[in-house]
Length: 249
Image 1 (spheres, rainbow, N blue to C red):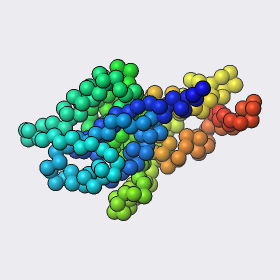
Image 2: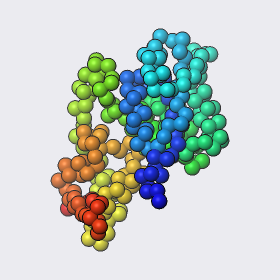
Image 3: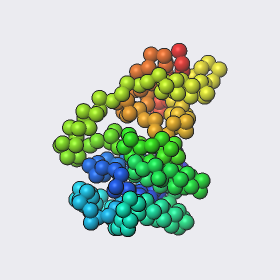
Image 4: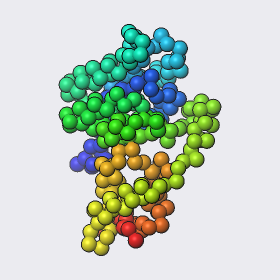
C-alpha cells in the first residue's frame, strides 16, 4: 500500500519558468525543491533569447533538461512571455497529463492563471523573489522564495550576495500570532495539536510561510525557538514513528 508521501512524490508537475522575472543562478535549487512535491514532467522556460539579459540562462538549460521557448517581444512595453506561458499552461491543463503546476516568476500577472489552475483542481506552487507581489503569492497553494534556495552550484559572487541577505529577518509578532492561532484552531481539549496538521493549516492561511524564511530548516526547529510554544515528541504505539505535538503555553 502506498503511503501519503508516496502519493505526493507521484504527483506530476508542469514547471513553467518566466526568464524575464527570476534570476538564473539557482535553477538546480529550484528543481530540487520542486522534486519534494512531485515529479517535473514538463520543464519549459520562456523568454526572448535574442536579448543579452537572457544569456545567463543558456548555460543551465541543457544541464537541467529545460526546454527553452522563444518568445519575441512584438511591442515595446508589452510582455509577450506572459501570454505564451498562460497559453501553454491552459493547453497542458486540458491535456490531463499533470496534477499540478509550478510557476516560477516574480510577476503578479500570473495571479489569475494560478487562481484558474487551482479552480481546475490543480496544485499550484509558486517560486519567486521576495519582491513578488502579494496577490500572486496568495493565489498559490504554496509560495517559495528563491532567496532561501541558494546552493553551492550558484556562482560565487551570487552566493556571497545571498549569504549577506541571509541575515534573515527575526520571526515577527504577526507570524508568531499566525502560528499560535493555528495551533489553537486544531488543539484538543488539553491544548495539544499535531505539528503536521498545524503546518498544513498555516500554509492555507499564508502560502509563503516557510521556516527557512527565518533560518530554520524544519518547522519543529522554528517552533522550539518560540518561547510561548511548547513541543512534545511522542513515539507511536509500535515505537517506529515519532509524532510531534505543539501547544501554546
